[in-house]
Structures are given as structure tokens and as C-alpha cells.
Length: 122
Image (cartoon, rainbow, N blue to C red):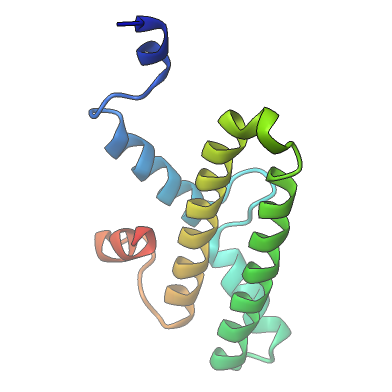
């Protein structure tokens, strides 16, 4: 068996840590990704504090963002698939967690609670 491949793959013990990092990064933000609280507050302000309009605005914005991210990660074609598939999945989970947590914040939930963390990942 070729061990060079298995050295680069996360083992089962690493998976919960990776998932937790993705969810927390989605909620807390990282780099150009704002925190879920910032997203919620910005959309609330731009929608005159109408919660339903803000939630719909977040969903529209994230759908557009996810589509453009998918397009960009697909530009490399077959040559870059080994890098772009994991990157695309990580981006997708991070954006999903950010979106779910932003909506939860608008609805008045504590976005740092375990319940919200779990539902943000699902």
C-alpha cells in the first residue's frame, strides 16, 4: 500500500476538528468573510430593520456569492480538481454556517450556543 497518499488525508480523529473549525469560521468570520453577526446587522440596517426582508436579502446575497465561488473554483478544470473540490466544499460549509447563523441572529438566537452551532452545520 502506498503510504504517501494516506499521509495527506485527515484521519477520523481530525474530522470533528475540521468540522468544528469550518462552523466556527463561518460564524466568526475569517479574512473577507464577515462574522454572522456583522452580516445580520448589515442586512437588517439596509432593510430598515425588517427581519423578513433582511433574511431574504441574506439568502439572495449568499446564493449569488455561492454561485460565483463555485464558478471560480471550477475555472481550473480537471487539472485543479484535487485542490478545488476540497476548497469548494470548505467554502460551501463556511458560507452555509455563516448564513444560518446570521439568520439565527436575526431571529434572536444565541449564535454561540451549541444548538445553533450544530444547526449551522446541518
